[in-house]
Image (tube, rainbow, N blue to C red):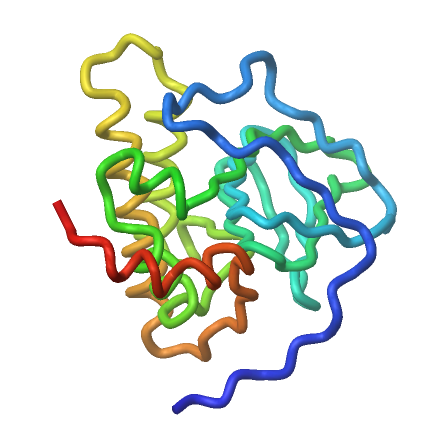
Amino acid sequence: MQNRPSRPPLPVIYEEAPPLGPDLIPDGGAAFCLRIRDVTYLHYHSTLELGWCVGGAGECYAEDRIFPFSAGDVQVIFPYQRHYSRSGPADVSRWRFVCLDLSTLLPALGFFDPSSVEEWMQQEMGLFGIFSPARCPRVHAAALRFFEELYGEPDRPRRRELCGASLCALLAELSRASRDVEKLAIRRDPVLSQITPALREIPAG
């Protein structure tokens, strides 16, 4: 059994954003302007956070690593990972962020069951942070496809199914790209961990 690295205590600051619902309708309006220029604080969420930089440049700090970003890059931050991002000194970045509770969202879209999603996250993920076409082009392409579907016209045929499929493709590409790297020590969802044995007893179908 692989030994996972020890995990430092979580920071005091915890920020919970409403997760994307099964209707897959994100908050409207213009892209979020990331105006943080100086180091402020680390925070974390209990959900998966995906981001799409639609303009500007800057840096993302996550789990003691620094990832530069620019327009077109995407961000993947797993549950309970400490992170924050800031724009460059002369180039305010603009982002679209969504938080995803995979244990409820994917089953609602017809993909996986909660315990399978939890195990996949725990056992197979090793990469996180900023993804550009130069770093893991397949992960970047899958994430971009998800955002393009998510923020496209809401009445497009099969939009919901394609959003779900592109999200699953992103997770699969992350898993594949993480095959030869050390796996993350992602904290488990405490509620899901308690009910997983019962979920496994529920007949499928």
